Amino acid sequence: MAISAVLDSDAREGLVVSADYFKPRWYAAYTCANHEKRVREQLQQRSIESFLPLYETIRRWKDRTVRLQLPLFPGYTFLRIALRDRLSVLEIPSVVRLVGFHGRPAALPEEQIEKLKKALAGVVRAGPYPYLAVGRQVRINAGPLEGQEGILLRKKGNFRVVISIDLIQRSMIVDVDGADIEPVFSSRKVVQEPYVT
Image 1 (spheres, rainbow, N blue to C red):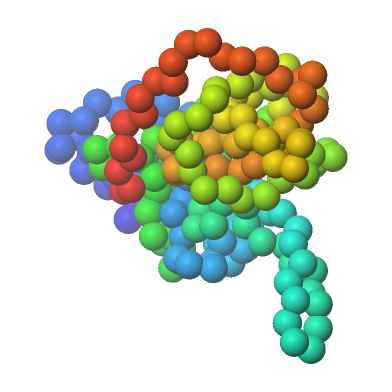
Image 2: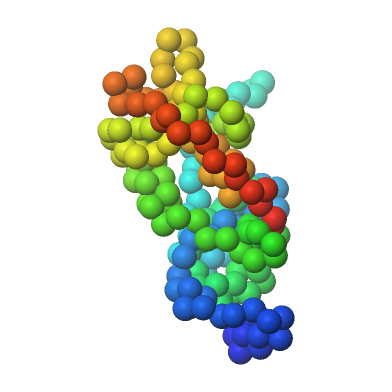
């Protein structure tokens, strides 16, 4: 389907096409199970900027031990496109939909993706963690994740912070120094349940 057809269909639905429609922004693509790397490869072949956060884990089987790179947010790959180009993404067989609200893809904050990239490129150890909606809210005040807020946990005497991406309802856990966090006293805002488009 051509871009003009997309614009025409949006116009017929009574939607106003804003300047943001043509501006590249980060979106989360919901993928088929275990197809995140395949989607990233397809995006790269189509010259679409993408980001697939990975973490390293060791899996043991009876006969061997293997070091694997697995998606930090299983089922999701991030991509940077102008909304008008969404069909080139949705045509990829392993992409189920773009995450959003009320049938419209929702953009992720640019700074959240950039901080995540910077942290994972550095020395921050990260791993997946179940999404949490309650807990002690803290802000990281030093290091590559400076300014990022999350939920404070303790494990074996060490501080860990669960950082969540509300739009896709996924979280990761990072080790932090107790001196690098401060409490957030405002209550956590209620996040609208995302609608996957």
